[in-house]
Length: 160
Image (cartoon, rainbow, N blue to C red; front, side):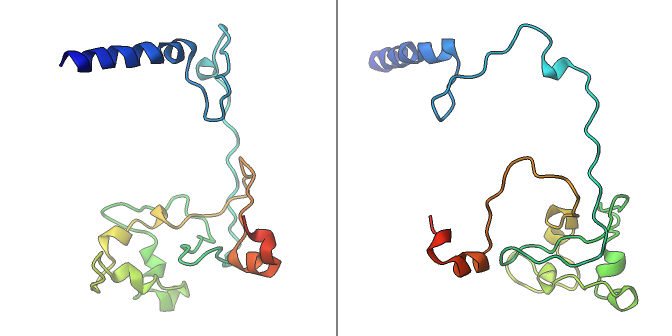
């Protein structure tokens, strides 16, 4: 028991310089110094404008296998909760003929064990967990994603 306490004290003593000076980033750089003035969290700045939804009703190409389809229309005031799912008024199997909307995938009628159900599986009921509308927002960071077709067409260029 005495050995454990001694070992813990030595470990704490060895870590003290890091605790006092601040935690360093993974690349070894020191954290930025914060000025003593007003901090951004205390400033009352206006919010950035909301990005506009793309509502052209065009299906978008998927970038990878099993990517959920993107929502090509506005869903701003859609109610999706335990009582109602507005998406089902058009995309439910019974309503697609009148709405001309694509029917939800048959995978949405399967439970986690692959058993087919008579209604939408509870784990697939909240559509916006996977399906997202598109906006004209600019990416926050750069993106070098390339789909498999462009990698295969480029030969070894896509290999890392």
